[in-house]
Image (cartoon, rainbow, N blue to C red; front, side, top):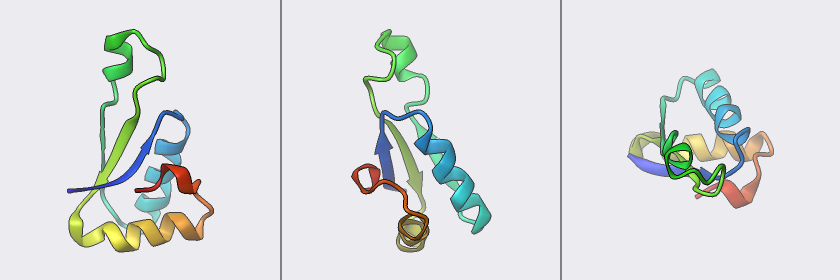
Length: 73
């Protein structure tokens, strides 16, 4: 697995997942409930992982759809 997106914006992860699902790329979200457990709201970033073999295409899909560059890894 390789990190594709890391963000504290709660809207970006579902947006990225929808774009990737449309291309048939599986993505796995990490740290979904960490900010709730810590009581910090949206202070801790959530991460979106993809398979190493899909990373290049997944990143290209997000860039082509004007995904915010500061969230991409």
